[in-house]
Image 1 (cartoon, rainbow, N blue to C red):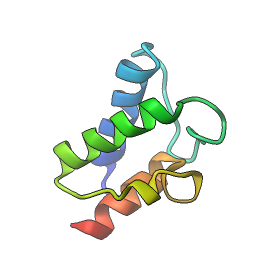
Image 2: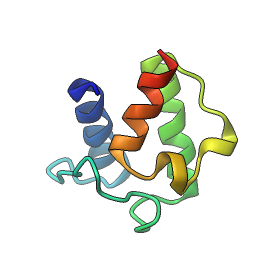
Image 3: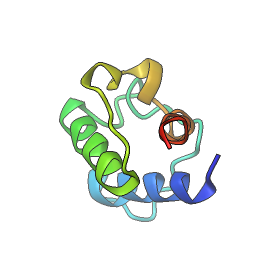
Image 4: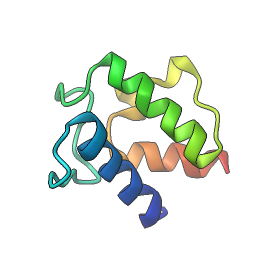
Length: 81
């Protein structure tokens, strides 16, 4: 899995969503099920993934099963490349 992708995702969430650029989000830390991000931010994050990584995310994939951790996000991105 690309460390670069994971780092970019973590930094984006910390900086743009949590408004805390010093916050470190672990690769296996729950971001949806923990309540760290809400559904509005989830849509924003999916758009960033699509634009920055060039992959398509279906609305049905915006859930805890496929999108809850940086590891899951990175795996989804890698599977689409």
